[in-house]
Length: 281
Ligand SMILES: [Zn+2]
Image (tube, rainbow, N blue to C red):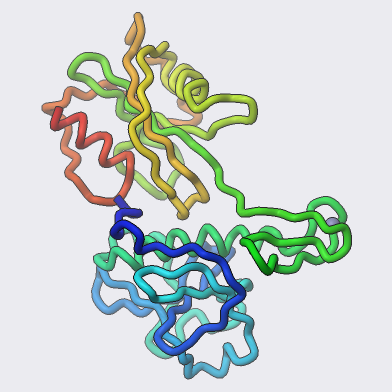
């Protein structure tokens, strides 16, 4: 999966660091969810290295994100498309999803995780309580209001991915109005006051009208593209298996026999791994 870059290779220890030669820079476009890349190949988007030769970024503050295998990654807490022309030198702004099929697994994970941090910083430049300006925490990853002292930590949204099974069938869906058009599983955000298991029961009932039993936790996955922490569960249909689809959320909800599943292992998303795992029994 996207986070499987090797144990211990992601170093999130926080610090107010400055970039040095060989470090890397993500310049994101906030409004269009884009990233400034050079396409080395169709499946190899690449990002700038320090030192930068670009006068357009002179005097900018580079915000440290994390290290992967010793390489530090930085970003700029501004909308990059307002700093740099859309196409410039050999670089251009491309949809962040260009990294979904990147062959460079370190950079793919860095792009997604970097976006999650970048978006959080962009959304927390001012205090939600008093409207004052926020400053960066010095000892830990936080932003602190200069006026009232409110401390805000990174926001992670837990959501569940649910493999609902009925014998040799699994409940597959397609989402309405999303960029991603492939098969999905039932999914949804945890609401305040719920356990993850409560969310599983509620989402399957809301989206497909089915009661479930025997809920088992499978695995989790950080999914920075959408600010999520995904929690994967399998469960079984309990009683009536006829689907009453929520056609506001979904465009398709069907039982698929494991021998009819066409998905292959993409080594990317938890949804894909859970589908393929069921297919292979
Ligand atoms: Zn404040």
